[in-house]
Image (cartoon, rainbow, N blue to C red; front, side, top):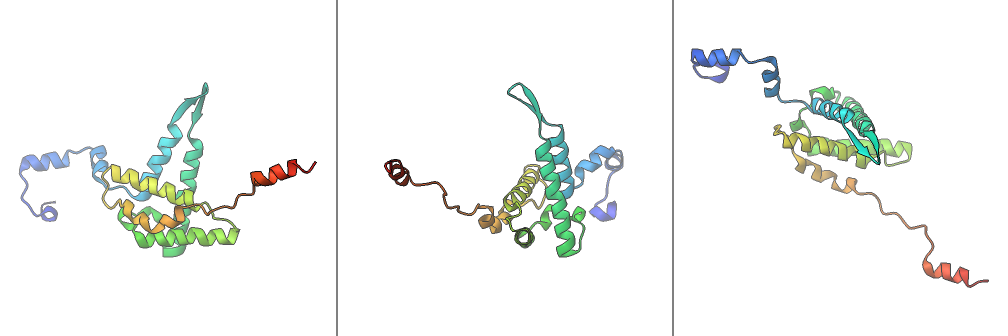
Length: 173
């Protein structure tokens, strides 16, 4: 401990350091992305609200977070050959996010859809934001700038009839 911190500790400081509880030590450890996902999932599973006289849970949101976490695990295994459980927020840089967004799009092309890219990126963004608010080092929301164009839904063409056409059809009789 002395060598690691490069200072001479007083007996009082040593006693305080070695008398820390397990909970205090865990608070000092920087959580991984997966650990923060698990915390958020547990929060959502236990959260309820009352709407129109009914008690509702956030289980759907929790399941969406679980799916995104599983997708991230698969992505890091396929792309980098690494376990996602070892990823810290400093690992979620522009390159990682660009690769992740491209992976989502590529899988979507195989399925013939957008593969929920907006939801997957948005949930990851919320987790990084939660880390930033907690002061976790490496939580960088600016890294998501590279994915801005992928957050957008594509323009859709209206299939509704123009009002002038409807009026013309009405006057046919």
